[in-house]
Length: 195
Length: 195
DNA sequence: CACAAAATCGAATCTGCATTAGAATTTTCC
DNA sequence: GGAAAATTCTAATGCAGATTCGATTTTGTG
Image (cartoon, rainbow over all chains, first blue to last red):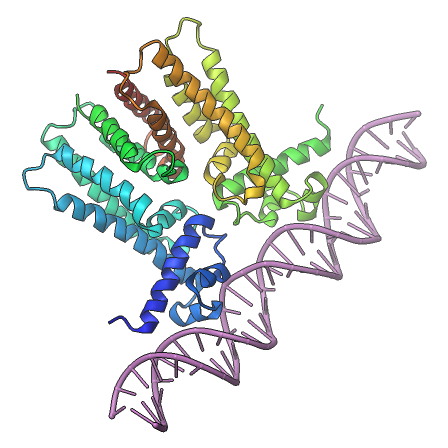
C-alpha cells in the first residue's frame, strides 16, 4: 500500500520524465512538471532536494529500466536460443520499451549529453552497464561463430544503438506499425552480422 | 570583400552554431554566444532581431549546408557510377560533414524536435528537401534493381539516417578513425540493401 | 581628413523561473 | 476523535538572462 506521499512522488517523477523527454534538460520547467503532476511547484521540493536531483533520478531510472527490460526479455528466452535470436529479442525489447512503454527511456536517451557534467555520473554508470549488456550479446555471438570475423562489431553496435535511439525522433504509430520498424531493424542486423 | 560587419555576423552565427550544438535550444545563452564570437551580447541584436531568429538561421543553414554538401559529393561522381555507390558516397559525405566540418549540421540535427513550433517551418522545409534527396537515391537504386524488392526502403532509410545522426553522440576521433566508422556504415547499407 | 552612417558597447530594464518561508491542510497512529 | 507529524499550498525572494536605450567608437566615402 504505497502511501499517498509516495504516489505523489511517483507522479512528479513521471511528469518530469515526460516533460524532460519533450523539452530537454534546459527546457524543463518545474512549473510544467508540477502542472502535469497535478500539484503546485513548491511541493516538488518536499520530495526532491532540487531540480537537478529530480533530473538525475529520471535519467538514472530511464537507463536502469531499459536495461532491466531488455535483460528480462533476453533471460526469458528458452535456454537453447541461439545468440543471434537473443540479439533480435534485444532489438525488439529496446524499441518497444523506448516507444511504447516509458518516457523515462527517451528522457535519458535524448538528454544524456545535454545535462551538466555534475549530473552525469550516476546515469552514466547505468548506461555503461547497458552497453556491457549489448557487448556481451555480441561477444557471445562472435564466440559461437554467428558473427562473421571481419565485422567491426563494436562500431556496428554503436551504429545499431544509434539507429534504435533515433527512432523516437521520426516514428509515428499512425504512419507505420512498430512491428514493421522492428522487423526492418532486425533484418538489418541479421544481414550485417552474418557472413 | 566582406565588410567588417558581415564578418561579425558570421562570427556570431558560427558561435551560435557551436553553442547550440553543445547546449541545446533552451541551454543556449546569448552571453556565451557573444563570448565565443568575441563581442558583447547586445551586438547580436544589431544583426539579428531576436534570439529565436538567430536560432532559426543556424538551424536552416545546418540543414541546407548538409544537403548541398551531400548533393555536391554525389554530383561529382562520374556519370556511370552505379546507384549503390552513389548511396555509399552520400553516407560518407553526410558523416564527414556532420563530424569534421560543421557545427551547423549537428546543431540542426540535435535540436530539430526541441525548438518551439514557431521556429520549425523554415528549417523543416530544408530537411524535407534533404529527405527527398535520400529518397531519390534509394528510388534510383530500386529502379535499377540494386535494392532487393522485399526491403522496406523507407523504414531502412530512416534507420540509416538515425544511425548516422547519432554518431555525433558517441564518436571520438582519438578512439577510432572516422574512416572506420564510415566503412562499417557503408558495409551495413550494402548488406542490408542487396539480396 | 572630416563627417555621416554603421556598428558596437555599457548600463539599465523587465521577465520568467527556481527556490524559500511560513501558513494551512491532510495523514497517520494512538 | 484528536494531536503530532507529514504533506501541500500561497505568497514572497532572488537571480539569471533576454532585450532595450543611449552613448561611443569605428567604418566607409566624398
